[in-house]
Length: 582
Image 1 (cartoon, rainbow, N blue to C red):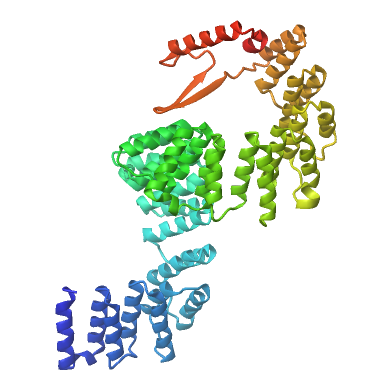
Image 2 (tube, rainbow, N blue to C red; image 1 turned 180 degrees about the vertical axis):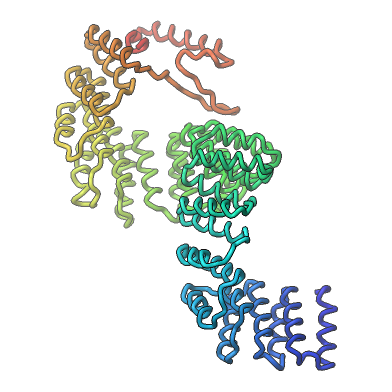
């Protein structure tokens, strides 16, 4: 307001002296008020002007309203202008084009260009392209782009690249970039980030590395936005080490940098690394936002890191993030508790949810099912159906898993039979695998084998491995041989199949077959994956491999192991030598 004071005095002087009657004076005042964000004064000057039907006066008010983000009012003045018969010129149309709030108005203005024979200069063309991109009309934008004369405006090239990225047409985004390079126009950091986004989403690692090399050569690598885009590109191409290298070499990091690298670690399956980075983020003085916790919660789920999961949830509550999170975020919290085995806390979150979607119900049904709470799982499945939500394929997997783990054989078979006729969900291979596992756990191996033989879908290795595992539990070597052959026929050389068969043969005293299996494994170079376990402590996750000698506490660990083994032997437990040594 203080800056406007001299302007208002000049305005008063112009009124007294009669200068306001001049269109030039009115235009100058409208421009002044518009640039000072005093829109009401600008409109007042327009309305009091003696020559309001002058195109220059209209141009100034339309431009001022557009610049102040009032497109509807700007378009209204354009309509008034046309109704009074004032013809727009090439300075009117760029602002009017920006003010268009729908496609019909935009195309009408575009058509007017030809009617008025104004031609397509860079300013009008640029406005049309940006507006078409706003409505994601890439073909229209490209047509205008192609008709423009020599384009030396880097902003337009960047707009076209980002427009194609936004609609998922990465190949065309890269073609525009190549065309731009051929014109000799030097890309800027916005070009680089746009191209990297296209390469990231297209999974073009080789070209991504070429762009990275270009950024180093041209000095763009020092830009924060470019470095963040590089992390994102390497992450989407599953190149964790390259993404980490870019992050570690950054002199300056922002919130986006931390969120990007945390998300990359989670996407690449480095769940322990995700939680370590979350801790480093806190130490560096950055407060996690909703994006951060949405990436961190799945890491807690995969590691069953309940303590860390509770800390993340607690942080969300104290920081108010629990109020800004959507259903997806709440589902992630619930999923974390369920996978960590804390169904009580998962249920508390579930019961407090206002807007439950199918995923919310599925998480709870699956969680109860996996942890042996069959009654609770089926009760929630029933409530889901009654709530009006239609159960999907995942819902039935959860319900069938519950039946399998709780031994509800009759209910499980009933659900499989009702899936398609009652709920319209065709049984998939996962549903058959659950029922076969259920029958196998119950010792009904013959019925399980008959179901496999009569399935409407070709059984895959998951089905046969579930059956093979059941044969091992119940010591049925004959059916196990059939299952093992079928597993290998469908193309699985997984070491676990050989281990299962070896244990079955060993339990049946068929040691020659055990030796043959080992010989086959050596011939086919099948390696047994080492056993792996982990434990959550306050300083992070501690991972152990079979015969691991690399842990700093190895002496204490092996002392405890020897003590436990001696205790077991003292109580009469006989170690299965074949199983432990295979």
